[in-house]
Amino acid sequence: MSTALITGCDYGIGFEFARQYAADGWKVHAVCLDEASREKLSALSNDVHFHHVDVSDPAAVSALAERLRGEAVDLLINNAATFAPDGPGTLMLPDMDEFTRVMRVNAVAPIYVADAFETHVAASDRKLMVFIGTRSGSIGDNGSGGHYAYRCSKAALNMAVKSLSCDFAAQGVITAVLHPGSVATETRKGGQIPVDESVTGMRGIIEGLTKEQSGSFRRYDGGTIEW
Ligand SMILES: NC(=O)c1ccc[n+]([C@@H]2O[C@H](COP(=O)([O-])OP(=O)(O)OC[C@H]3O[C@@H](n4cnc5c(N)ncnc54)[C@H](OP(=O)(O)O)[C@@H]3O)[C@@H](O)[C@H]2O)c1
Image (tube, rainbow, N blue to C red; front, side):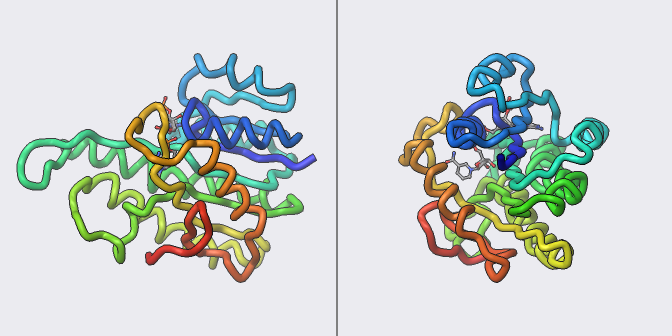
């Protein structure tokens, strides 16, 4: 049985990843921010294990890694992320604490999660670490500005994933950033792509990832994106 550990499973893309992998017979460790999500995750299958962990809390992440010590994780999906509402002024900046919170959850936490679970992933058959990024984090694709906190956090995540592909190469761990498309979720009602379609597409990309593609930035429907 293959095992996935997925962060940010309360709803949206993370929940759908958990649902689809569980339906395909995977064991899933579902990391959620809200204790209230336990019931719906646990109801997916007996092989879905709920973990109430804030990914931006290093002690909680280390404790989870310790609890799962000795268990191989074929696929780590760093999906959890947050957003800051626009503030006033031309740049519509949120206050600096909010900006920093977004950086911490979206860019810094995934690096620490990757570090905490390196041995679990390296001990598995598939050795995959995937990070859900966004086209909004692409410098080459940025023609409209705005959303400083979210864009900067996801651009920083891109850099981290590229570096992880270098630093984990000797362990055979493959890393990639995936853009899910503009997905209709509970928090993003204006998205165009149904969440099951996006996740099915990303699972196809994940399934085909090779060592040569480690450290790449890819779309849910195939193809790469400019960094
Ligand atoms: N939807 C899109 O169109 C789109 C486009 C491009 C990229 N993405 C990326 O895709 C991923 C999933 O997006 P989504 O639309 O499914 O968003 P979402 O519905 O807001 O889901 C994000 C999940 O992460 C959880 N989370 C937030 N902070 C966390 C923390 N500190 N620790 C643990 N979990 C935490 C959230 O829990 P709470 O809700 O309880 O805070 C939620 O379950 C994100 O990385 C996002 O940036 C989405």
